[in-house]
Image (tube, rainbow, N blue to C red; front, side, top):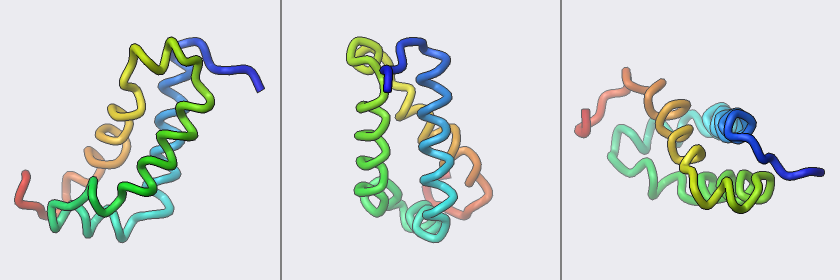
Length: 88
């Protein structure tokens, strides 16, 4: 499989990975937001997704962008703005 070399395709991949993460970890995400432990609680899942993203994107594109981290915020956290939390 060829590596992704365009920013648009890399963004789509990052968002798809984060969508899957959100779909399969709903309860942990809500718990992490409520307890302000989101990144600690979901560390294994986030890192597994990051590794998948890194393996599919050209190294030079991966090194100079933060599309995966932005997708975590846009796809997972922003969509959970209704969950009560101390941080917002």
